[in-house]
Image 1 (cartoon, rainbow, N blue to C red):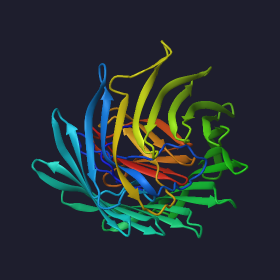
Image 2 (tube, helix red, strand yellow):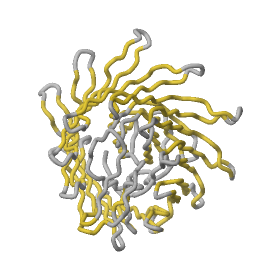
Image 3 (spheres, rainbow, N blue to C red):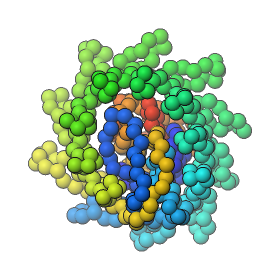
Image 4 (cartoon, one colour):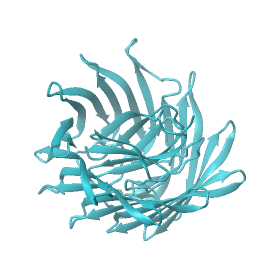
Length: 448
């Protein structure tokens, strides 16, 4: 859940929006706007006076206090700042510093801005005394929205193509297909895709994930997400798995709203084939400030008799609804109190400068994704935030684009899951989360 170096793009289910050191992964500083849980994807309109992030500091709780581990600083040109297409910052360059055990610069990132959009993003890593290219992402747009993202990685002999993701839009500029392709022996090969269908209100009512079977040249259904609305507000979401000839219920998400139309409680259920009933699984409770920003998220799991707290995140903001601090706390069932768990709970502090935001507002299809610990040995925990409640596919790939783990799950606006990596060889991997309307990607590192 820690955030380092800010990458302002990586919108599609990228196979490599972010590169990392094999020993100390470099996460992009993902400075976010106010954390507002919404029933639908609505672009935020922020023009005129604003603030843009110039630095971030990450700390993990130690024996008795938060201990700083790394920080990042970025620089801008003109009025470049927040980009609503990519939900990130359009900076020119940035540097990451890591405490190891003294402060050292170990990562650099460069972006090119064309027509007010991020065109390329290049990450460099310090190898001895030489800065070497590690990965590059190239983006194309249609009407201000991401059309495609192509990523390249340094596999030992310079940058080579790795993956390509393409969005197809309808006349209302809603994503109808998200296609993922992998580079193989000089050609692009189909891998996965998500198909979206919309109701008359232009809301996703059905989304189907499919994988490409090269031997038969056919798309095979994997899972289906069905959204149920009540007076235009998402009230339920059903995730079903394909059996080959029919759809089998798997997950169910229910949403409760407060008097202001904001999600107050999100409850997840899992289908029990043995009893043909829904079993309670998780619950997330949200608290808001008067401006509608999420200031607290509390997560619980069902222990067969009652809801039991796991952890919570607390947020603060500046006057422009930019995230100032984010910290986590853990629940102690013995004392019934919240506490800071050494080595697990974290705190991120962001710093800003004033600027004038003149960027045209457009809808976004980027989700927030955090992965910890980094590097990992036995398991990773992923935490994702979506603007729109939705179910997801989670895919982990190695650097050649081969799928090593894949699962489907329900998420809603918030998602948290632990995944074992004990069976994976040491090295770097990319985890992709593909939702109905939003996607996210991050690189992880496994050590032995």
